[in-house]
Length: 134
Image 1 (cartoon, rainbow, N blue to C red):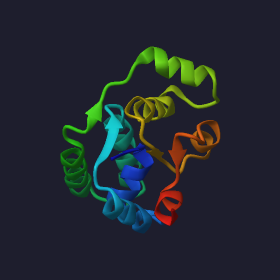
Image 2 (image 1 turned 120 degrees about the vertical axis):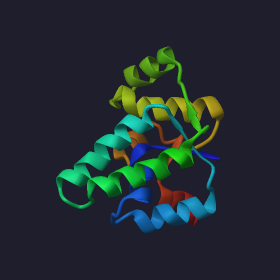
Image 3 (image 1 turned 60 degrees about the vertical axis):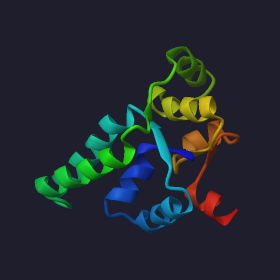
Image 4 (image 1 turned 90 degrees about the vertical axis):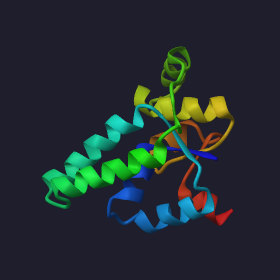
């Protein structure tokens, strides 16, 4: 069981240079968790792909439905005070701290490629490559 941020989900569901490593991560551990926020962030990424003509509207809908099905019952609310505290002690956004907060509450790793999160929370965050090579 791992917490994944939106970028991991996006690389898993949308074509990118990191899709293969995210596929390997899913094979390593398919029980992915995220704060409820992931869905809004994911929509933004999907819309970006649409605007760059990398996927069509019908592709976007299909990809989003698959991602939402994958994460059904694996989405969690986080504690606002804990998020504020983490944001206050780091340079990370409150959005990023929601993922860290969930990982901390569940006492599991957050898998991300976000350098700022990795720098600010090295005890809690790791890259897919770190996890797969260990």
